[in-house]
Length: 146
Image 1 (tube, one colour):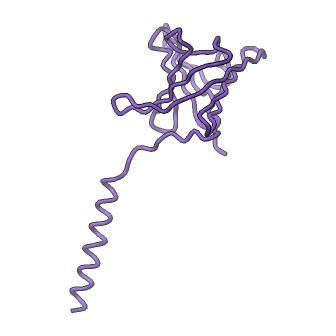
Image 2 (cartoon, one colour; image 1 turned 60 degrees about the vertical axis):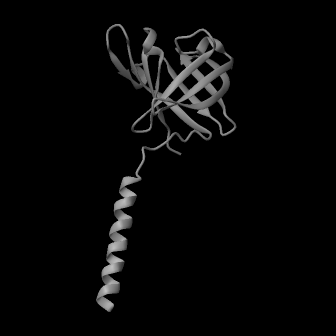
Image 3 (cartoon, helix red, strand yellow; image 1 turned 90 degrees about the horizontal axis):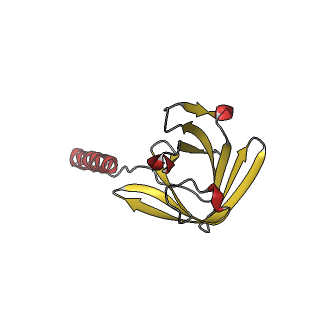
């Protein structure tokens, strides 16, 4: 009897461990008052990759839990800021943020002229801008650890 109970317990443990592997999902965006910093820039025309201080400019986003964001861009010591709201969206199983700028619209790094920008989630805690779809540079942002 004891062997049967032990066998049943082992089968249950095995079943639970197998089912949990099937339920593993890709991580999702965690943008509650988090800072995401520009870490890589790839020029669209030449495919040249730059990182860190070698990039043409430095910038970051702060995403707040109330669905607002702040963007700061530093070009040669001149800092500009913008702000607006964001929504989480999905396109073909690809999760992304759609930003709508209400202030500082000159910092929009997107292909449309409607004050909107998209940042796509990329595996490895990276957000990737969509500006490269219309000949802008490819921009990648990494979440700063707290």
